[in-house]
Image (cartoon, rainbow, N blue to C red; front, side):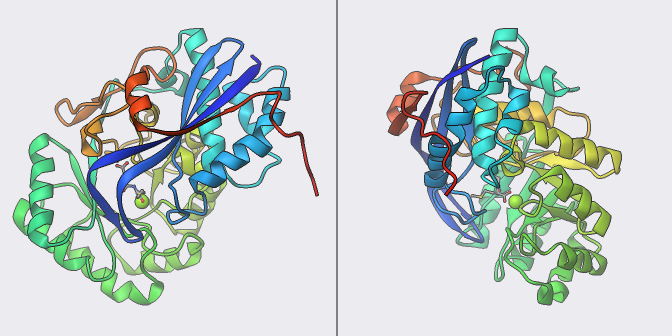
Amino acid sequence: MKLLGLDLLTLAIPLVSPFETSFGSQSSRHVILIRAETSVGIGWGECVAMSSPVYSSEFNAAAELVIADHFAHPLFAAENLSGGTVGHVLEPFKGHRMAKAAVELAVLDAELRAAQMSLGTYLGATKDRVPAGVSVGIMPSIPELLAAVGGYLEQGYLRIKLKIKPGWDIEPVRAVREAFGDEVLLQVDANTAYSLRDAGHLARLDEFGLLLMEQPLQDEDLTEHAKLAARLTTPICLDESIESAKDASDAIALGATSVVNIKAGRVGGYLEARRVHDICRAAGVPVWCGGMLETGLGRAANVALAALPGFTLPGDTSASARFYHQDITAPFVLEDGHLRVPTGPGLGVEVDEDAVASFLVSRRRIDPTNAPGPVIA
Ligand code: SMG
Ligand code: MG
């Protein structure tokens, strides 16, 4: 196919309640959607970058710039573009994986819609529904945390993840265990808030029988994660540290991770995400699908990915209502603690143009007439 145009739509969508992590609190999601116009039809993608470079170095303004000023020209020039070749076309550009993933998804969606194939089928999904976990932010108080967790369990969520940071770790975990029992599948996510000096403190979480501890140390700290893993019984699960299938392979070999959180945006696309899955599966390392507060578009893709056979743990694949009163597709709803894998062509969801219009902040059109050519200076 030929790529004919890219529309970058920036939306600001209010959250149902503020979401706090170790790096800050947000009350709305600013997200870039990509609408790819191709010779075979329209496709949609979603960029999981945030407004500020706090989860990783990527952020929305940079994603928009790199797509418009650097990615667009070679993509427009490619004669036989497909979802499978976007990665090769963009290979000369370092990093910017979330931006690359968004473009790849839009092209893949157009291709699969034209071929009448679902993303799940294309990726190799083996399930028609996936178990849903929920990520619970840092709360102002323990009673508010217990009320939130209780509400999610009542809705049927099959696994709870608590965000932790220094000063909000042992006590919230203890309180959740005491209130809801040892059977609840429970895990924690520190988003890099600790250092190896905290190993003794983090070992105090071992008594709570957690499924895993996600990304306690810095992104680059593979050796330190291996040292920490040796001091804990709680399995370490890397998120921010894993930006490619090679990273996953290295981290596993080092003993830095025994479970992997897979986010397509973080690793540069759903095809690289599948390679991470394949490597982990071959190594006997369980994986689960992470989340970046996706709209129904990105959520549809995540659910398709989570339906691959190596995804043996519930993901942060929660219902649309976890974050949004109003989604931009038909909402994903919990069915007996699961989300249904879309079966329609491509992402299998349709964009609600009215909802998009109501959240729209800016829109930018890039086509072969205005995309800057290559500059190496
Ligand atoms: O989409 O359910 C979701 C969010 C899950 O906690 C979540 N994501 O580190 O795993 C993570 C965080 C990253 C985003 S925090 C703003
Ligand atoms: Mg995480």
